[in-house]
Amino acid sequence: MKTFLKILTLFIGIGAVGGAVMMWVDPSGVSWGGEPMLDLLRAKMPWPDVFFKDFIPSGFALLSVNGIPQFIAAILLFKHHPRAYQAVMVCGIILMLWIVLEWWVWGFNALSNIYFVLGLVEVIAAIIGMKRCPKA
Image 1: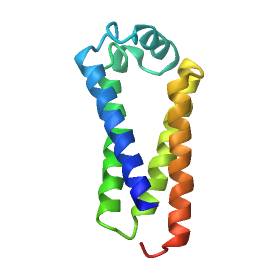
Image 2 (image 1 turned 90 degrees about the vertical axis):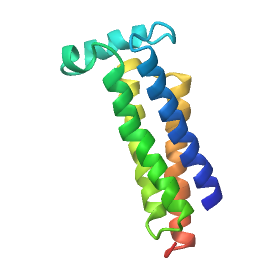
Image 3 (image 1 turned 60 degrees about the horizontal axis):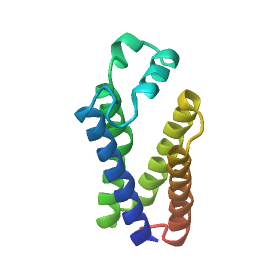
């Protein structure tokens, strides 16, 4: 279970870093098709003139909310920390909440749906891990 969760947390964390870098390299979203998404963010989110002039703040949010916590959970798994499974479960819940927000802004789409399932898998696997190894 730990090996699977190590791979999953690293995969999600690397994906978040990739998404953040993509947003910083082209904050307008034109080159990667994000421009329409930016318009929807401006229409649905608070303070559009502050946070959604471009994707730079969104990149920092993605990295902070989904990237860094996933890497912390992975490190805890590698170090066999007693709270590693709880950290993974929290990461899975955070990821699912992030995706619910994406669904509210953009509607359902394949990538968001996949990441929601990955978050759910993290939660379920973490619960199984906690039951199998309560001290690990």
